[in-house]
Length: 127
Image (cartoon, rainbow, N blue to C red; front, side, top):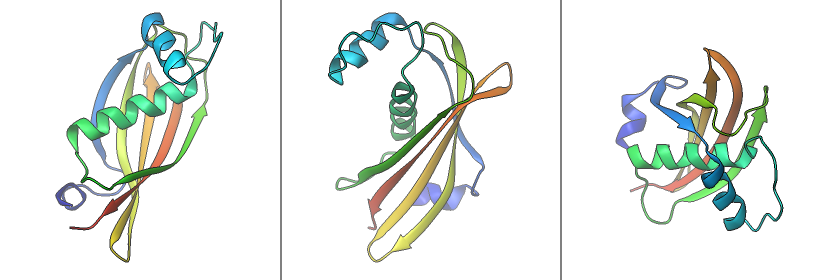
């Protein structure tokens, strides 16, 4: 996978700006089957979903790839309609048999302070 060769571990590979509005948050909850999520705060899984979306837009992965584990940590409450930045990095990768296991971490920042973090694992077939 060429993008693994271009970047060092823990190096920023992508940055994006997020503002999760009420409409998006409500549609997300509905799509997930979450009923009556009436909160002024962002659902933590929204962060992980959007981070993966931005990663895959820049670094497409081959058919047959699997998104496995996902962890989200919230350090400071994130209100809907707050604007903040996401910074994506590859924290680890390992080749096992015919697959690459890739750990992708996103830090979410407001005023240069980390307010949340998510880390997911992709299992990507080697070509």
